[in-house]
Image (tube, rainbow, N blue to C red; front, side):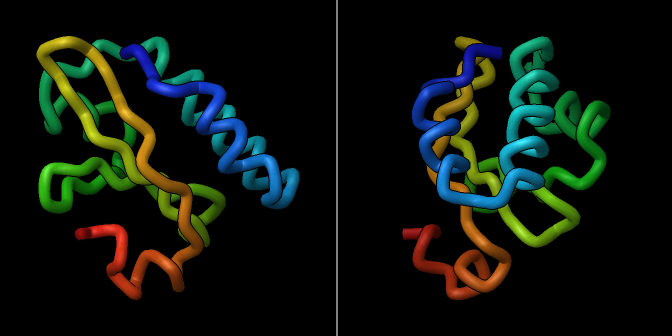
Amino acid sequence: MNVVSAKGLRDLAADKSREVQKDVQAWYRIARAATWRSFEDVRRSVKDADMVKGLLVFNICGNRYRLIVSPVFVTQRLYVKGLLTHKEYERGGWRK
């Protein structure tokens, strides 16, 4: 998968703890090496991924953060939308 934008993802994680940065890097390596053609493919490699209103949501750092990406499976692209704490995610503003 082509993660758009890897730099944006690093920037989102930059002000977070070292542990969060490490988990984001691990997710990036998994996503970059993957060939996901559907949500079912995603779930085979990342068990705790969810699909919410067309967006993929990944648990990061022991469920304390949510990484939100917009997938375009046909073109093998993942567009990074946000990296939120669990509390920020629960507020739901990202769904708009």
